[in-house]
Length: 174
Length: 174
Image (cartoon, rainbow over all chains, first blue to last red; front, side, top):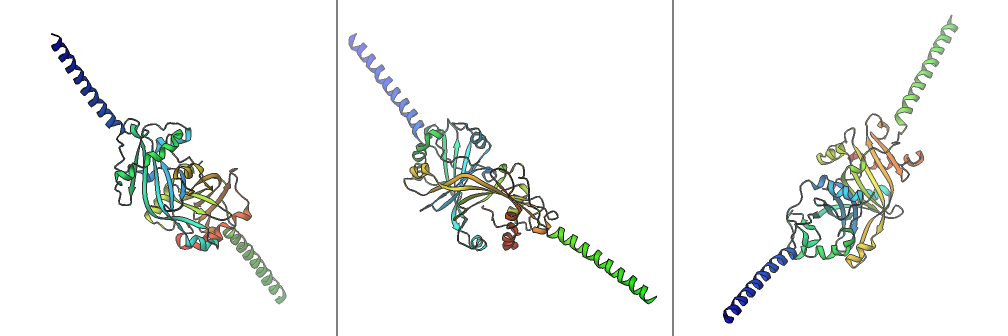
């Protein structure tokens, strides 16, 4: 009788452990796996203006940062965290001198957008993108295709540095 | 009789000359007097994005150039001259380094918008602004008031340098 009881308890314990481990593994797998944005949101070129930025060095870029209605409203009202549905787009271009502007000014001082280089997006969906602060990150080169996962895995670790503004670096330009 | 005829002819001639001169002066006065934009157009902060620019030197500025629906449509379709009703807005900010972006990147490379400095507008009305290429120019400092006429008189002579694009320097960023 003791042996049978021991066997039953042991079976129950092992079964529970397996069940627990498999459930833990599954939920950990879901929560930690970053999910990226694989398609550019429709209509982003019609969105309103948040701000502009310039990066020197290798990037040598001009960014125009635009927001959909939900993002613009949240920025203007100072809502943090951004509500689900907010999308922020960074349209990147080469940062190039403008020969015609310089000629008009009579000195070399003017820089404008050159060829477009890439579009980046942050899409807020606190459930779908729970593993990355509620934001889905997307990066699309000029061919419109998303870049590889190795590159995409670098987005959130950097944006984590600005966690106090819901992982968003760009401030609203009045 | 000869004297009277001579006198009458002389009077008629002088009267005509005076009439001609005064009419010529009046119409010349109307056509050449530049008229400036004295109020900022409503809703310009909601307009769509045309492009961005940076000026070095004394200006040290970031510009975000926006357009109302008529201007955006004309840009996208390549319509020149711009149709009446088109408005182009240049929102200017100080060009400042971003300490928080630089910290995230791990190097000094990032520039963002600082305090807003002025807003400039070009409003197309081929009749009202016939003297200045059909464009009314406006420049408003942070207090929302237009700047003085001496300053405003410098707008069109510079924009005349890009007459082939209907006096508009900024190109549309795709």
